[in-house]
Each structure stands twice: as structure tokens, then as C-alpha cells.
Figure 1 (tube, rainbow, N blue to C red):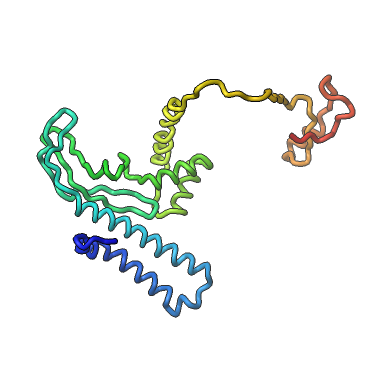
Figure 2: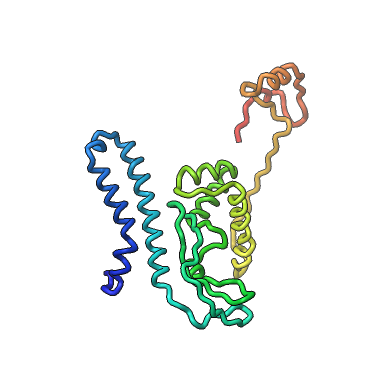
Length: 242
């Protein structure tokens, strides 16, 4: 339920998302769209829908900026009173829907680094990448190379992260590894059953040659095969699958 006192803020801030939604509905109702195959309709909704979502998060951030109160008792870590307040200090936030602007109040004093309380409320990272975009990046880094992760994020989201910044995000994410495990304490030794141990190596196993490269296969065919103590004659040529 929307409170009456907030209606004036909502009507203005959410104009652009409403316009985008109306444009999407209009496009889907257009006669030209009626002749499209479903794949092209998917592309249309994905493209226009992503822009709708970007405008929604932008509208919410604009609303947060309008409602941010003026703080009077804000101090720096050394106790200095931050009396200077600047309105509409702007920074870019790269999200999975695309770039948006975060506008907020900044508080400072001569020789003191400015503070932005709304940044803390929103839990923004020091760089410009949102948590959603960072999570997508780390997920792809764990599966692929950095170049592939960069390409995947660009292809599947409305944002993009250059390779160097992708590497920095991976390093930052890995810093929590030791802290995570240091906080996991056990209350004693876990009771388990007997240990099953299996050890294997590939020494003495005759390999199949069908899938070798031409030069390697030719060398293998010309080489004299010798039977060692670990491989009995009846095992020659047998394929061992592990």
C-alpha cells in the first residue's frame, strides 16, 4: 500500500519506467510484431524489458536521494564535526541491468575526506560494480578464463566489466576464504566409519594410439614395446578405464 504522503515523489520519479513499460506494451501490440516469430519477440522483450528494469532501479535510487534526511551530528573517525553538506553528489553504479546514477548528500570538513551515509545504507562497494554484477563475474571466473568471463558478462547482462577489473574482483572475492573457514569451529572429532583408500598410477599401462596426433602416433608405433614387471604379457593392448 502506497502512503498518500509519498504520492508526489512517486509520480515524478517513476515517470520514465512507466513510459518504458507503455512502450513495451505498445510494441507487443503493434501489427508488425504480430508477424514475428517467437524468437524475435523474446529478443524484443529482453531488450526493452532490461531497459525497464534499469529505469526501475534508477527510479528507486532517485527516490532514496529525495528522501535522504539532512544529518546534523555526523563526525569523522577522529571526531571532527562534518558540518559541510553538499547536495546531489553523483557516482555511477554498474548493475546487471546497465549503468545507473546514485545521487546522495556528501558531508565534509577542511582536510577531511567526505562521507556519504547513503553509500553505507545501500552497502555500495568502493568500485562502481554492484553486488549482482560482481556475483555474476565471480561465478563465471570460477568456470572459465578471465577473457571468457568478460565476454559472458557482456553477453548475458546489461553491464560490462573490463578484464583488469574482473581480475581485481576475483582477488577481492578470494580474500574472504581464510576468514570464512576460521569462523567455522567444530566441537570435536567427527565419528566416521573405516577409511577407504585407493591409489593408482599410470606406470606401465599401454596406451591406445587411435586418438594421438599423427607424429606422436607414428613414433609410438615405431617404438619397441617392452614388458616390465608391472605389466604381464596378457595385459598388452587392454584398455583400462578409471
